[in-house]
Image (cartoon, rainbow, N blue to C red; front, side, top):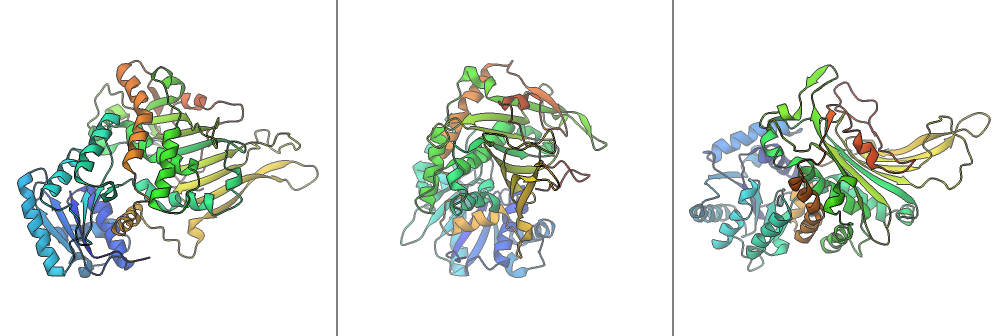
Length: 506
């Protein structure tokens, strides 16, 4: 891949978990693969009282823990610098400007900066404003400045619009990179390649041949020590509004005229604009929410959500959400999309299932009375990444008994089966000025506009159902009733789990 231009990456919140678990290991992987620019430096910013030496030692320990192939690499660690300031205080920014000038002169780096906001959301509009006041976001003489913003991009439609307006007062849209790590996954990007590089799929990718589409993102863990944060968010805000709707857009979008940031994101925006609005009084017909309850899973007691640290005793925050939606356009008219996400489910798995319409006339009997004659295309995002096509095959012997068989591809079967982490790809894309896999402001607002009636209904109606479900199950039974039709049902992946439930074959 093309090596990006020389620059300095500034990480606000550099002493936090995101930096030590994801960002620095991703940068190290780029370093190992020789994808970083020749002249490159990282400046960590935070309130923690590190100096450059102690910050390097801290990141050395983090790489030992979170990087699979790390060995004591002083060449990489020497790229790291640190400045202890409070980013919420305006007077701190002249010190930042001075530090950047010192690093630039010491490494002969042009005035190209990436500012990564790995901070609480309350600083998302504060930091860019102070950067702009100190001239750190202005582009001149061929230099560039980019700002990466972590999710959440607001907590509702009103706050998302407000955040976008604040950011666009001091930055151009092409300087903004709203990161959604789901879009950085190799298998997510492969959705586009599967659809648009193979002539066998695209002719069938419409309402005439597809019965329904199903997207599942399941986790087998609870909220852990994030109970205080999660209770203000919930499954809809944390996963469904962003990650899963982005997957819907990739599955449903029209072919772009070319593979570019502008054209791809335009087509994704059109999907969000085509989502059929859900009226507040009809929310219960389209959505089921649940909360995990105490139960024994593989002999171990798993506590209820309300017993987790930081969670109120009477919390009505959902840890599971299943939604039915429709895309009102020519391609998808009448085809339901079912999406679900939840915590404390049987395993960790994310997959997309395309359910094709069954043959119009049944000619052959099945070997198994419960045989599902529908063809399915399963796109596994994680784990055991790959693609599986299910179709009927004759059973050996007399007669025409039919059973389901699989034709599959696994990424692990490739000679080079090393799948890069999402943050590796996304950081490199930003360094190269490619925003294709980053969310655009108008698309973020449209996604919030779609879920706004759901949130309003929940806030106004304390009696809206919140169903309990035991840990280790696939959510409330009511979610099964959401899928209408005699042949339609959720796909329950990973029937043969490992003892700890952490591995799930395609």
